[in-house]
Length: 169
Image (cartoon, rainbow, N blue to C red; front, side, top):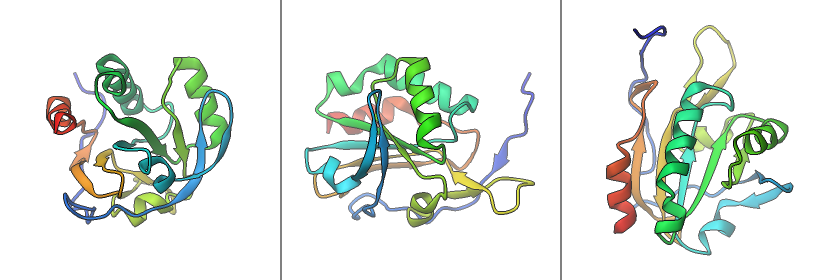
């Protein structure tokens, strides 16, 4: 039995396949440290799967990161996987340490990046609080979108087999 409401999110105005994804600079957190890094610095090194997810500690975040860990796409394909949520660097550091994650996570507490990507989600009952809706963008070295998935409802998860097909190219 589902003990939460499924919420329709409505249309999103996100970057589509063939378009250039917006660049941004935010703190990028890994197991060792965090520092300001731009998305273009990461994509300059090759394909990047940018994963927008709800805040650290929310059950959808756990499911997404467990699935990505289990599929090990970063080992199987020439792709770097990075996450982004509204959680602070301190919260990211805790998530990375507790889950033994190897993926770096961008911190965007103001949710400005999700807004630039057209995927912000205003949280019900919390005036002025938003988070990114779940989304995945496969970007090439020029930040051109090769694959895009954006949630239409909350909670919602990508078709991981479809994402893997995009990674195979």
